[in-house]
Image (tube, rainbow, N blue to C red):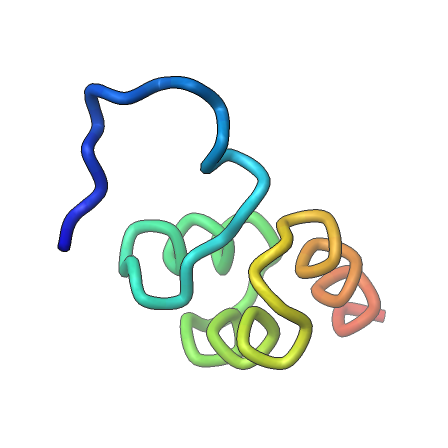
Length: 61
């Protein structure tokens, strides 16, 4: 089921969804990764944005 874009209570901002193409695309572009690399990071390190961001930064080094 698609996200309800009318609900803006802040619960969703701290997570990255590997099943939402636009979120994977944004995450990949933000870190200079391919979509597949982004999905792997999200699946391996979990959907918590801070954990996934840290893993992507380590991957770039």
